[in-house]
Amino acid sequence: MQTHLTDLIKNTPEGQEADAILRNCVHCGFCLATCPTYQLLGNELDSPRGRIYLIKQMLEGQEVTETTQLHLDRCLTCRACETTCPSGVQYGHLLDIGRGMVEQKIRRTPYVTFKRYLLRKLLPNRALFGAFMGIARLGRPLLPAQLQRTIQPQPTTSSHPSAQTHPRSMLILQGCVQPGLTPNTNHATARVLDKLGITVITAERAGCCGALAYHLNAQEEGLNAMRRNIDAWWPFVTRSENPVEAIIVTASGCGVTVKDYGHLLQHDPVYAEKAARIASLTRDISEVITAETATLIPLLQAAATSAQPASPRHLAFHAPCTLQHGMKLTGKIEPILQAAGFHLTKVADPHLCCGSAGTYSILQPKLSRQLRNNKITALTIENPELIVTANIGCQTHLQGGTSLPVRHWIELLDERLN
Image 1 (cartoon, one colour):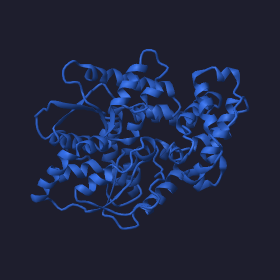
Image 2 (cartoon, helix red, strand yellow; image 1 turned 90 degrees about the vertical axis):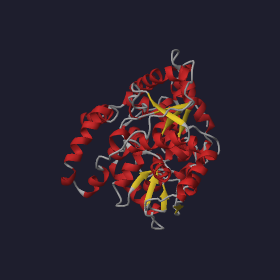
Image 3 (tube, one colour; image 1 turned 135 degrees about the vertical axis):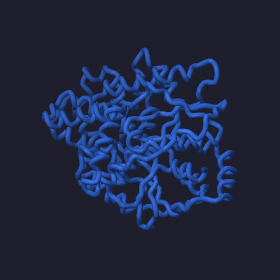
Image 4 (cartoon, helix red, strand yellow; image 1 turned 30 degrees about the vertical axis):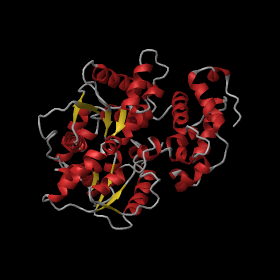
C-alpha cells in the first residue's frame, strides 16, 4: 500500500509505526472472510481492510468524521484478521493508533463520554467493583433471568490448600473484575500449581493490566496502569534470591496486553527496558501447565484411581480471541482437558468472536448479542454439559446467554486433582 502521510504525523513514532504497518497491506481481502462485524453488517468499512483505508485517509490529512469514529468503534479487536493475513499486517497496533487520533479530533456526546468514563473508573478498581457486585448480588433475585445468570452468587473458596512453599515461584495477576466475579479462578490456579511444586505469589499493588482504559482511548491512563504493575512486580523479578520464574495470567484478555507491554512502552525512556522484561516473563496459565505435563499426568492418573465426585464429561471449549489470535496459543488447553478425562464436543467456526471484547458488550450491545447468540449455537451443536473458556470477559458474556454453566477450564483441572 502506498502512503503519503502528512509531515506532522510522519515524523512521530506513531506515524512511523503506522506507515510501516500500512505498507505491509496488499489489499488482498482475506481478512473480510474472518471479520465478525463484516459478516454481520456486510459493509466494507466494518472490515479490517475498510478500517485500514479510513485510518490511512486520516493519516494523509483527509477529513475525519463521526463515520470514521463509528466504524473504528465497531471493531472488536478480535484480531482474527491478523491470523488470516498472509502479509503479517499488525492491524491491532494500527487500530490503537487510529483510535487514539480520532478521539482527539471527534468529540463524543456527553452521555457517551460519561459512560466510557464510568467504565474506566469502575471496572479497573477492585474495591469499587467488588462493592458494586455485592450490591448486585443482594438484588439478584429481582433481576431478569439473563442478568441473574451473569451475576453469579458469591462462591466460597480458599486461596491455597496449604501453607507449604516451594523453591519455584511465580507471580499471578489478580486482575480487576475477575476477583469480584469469579475469585475461584485464581484460587484454583494456586492449588493446581501447588501440586506441581510451584508457589503462587500476589503483588498487592498490581491491579488492572491497563487494557480497559487503553482500548477506551484513554491511552495514557492505560499506560500508567501498566507502569504501576511493572513497579509492583519488579522487586520480585529482580530479587537476588529465588526470583520469580514467570508472571501468570489466567484471563487471556489481560495476558495479551501484558505480553505487549514491551511494545506499548517502547518509547518510554524509564520503562521501556523493564516493560520488555515483564512481557518476556508473562505466561498464560495454559503455557505454564503445558510445560509441566510430565508432572501433571501422573497426578491425574493417581487422582483417577481415587473416588471422584460426579462431574460433567462432555465439554465445549470456547477459545477466546485473545488466546488464539492475540497470543497465538492454539491447541494447548484441549489436550490438558482430554488428559484430565473430559470429552470435548465439536465447535463450529471456533475462530469467530463471542462478542464480549472487553467493554464492547456494553458499548455495542446489539452487535455483541448477535455474536453471542451465534457463538452459543456453535458451542452447543453436540449438546455439551458445560462450556469452558479461558477469559473472564468471555465467561461472563456467554453465561448471560445460556443456562449451561460456563466456567474457566483451570477450575475443572483443579477439581480433578483435588
